[in-house]
Image (cartoon, rainbow, N blue to C red; front, top):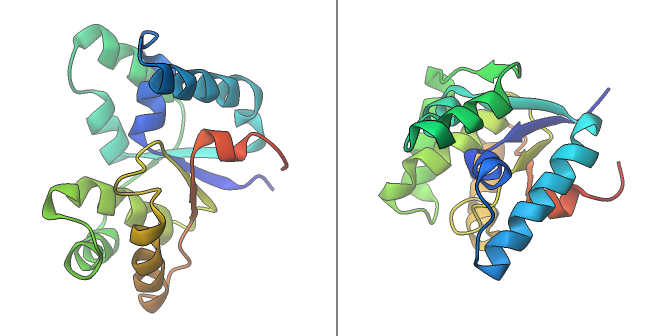
Length: 158
């Protein structure tokens, strides 16, 4: 059985964006493409309603490319249990209120039993200080938190 992996919107954005002139962003884009082309098949990929909404925003051509990249993958629905966990994460973790979508990404992955949450959002999601309290909150609510990582961290092994 393949590891269940929630792909957060930042990964899809890096995958489909024009090549950045910023060296770090360009490296993240290349790592994302390498993972998508060479490693994705080793994971059972999921997105959520939230990912679909976020991917559909902005420039119409770019949004179409993002939505095409995720078409065909199972879409996790926002439900009351996930929303309650996200609310708890916002109230009790180290996330600002503007990070409500980030809390919902984490809670959707936890509530749906994802093994991994893959993201480039290292401010509010793939952040050790944030995850220390978020993981405890997930477990206190009865859910095992996913392993949160970047595409680069899922390039080897598995």
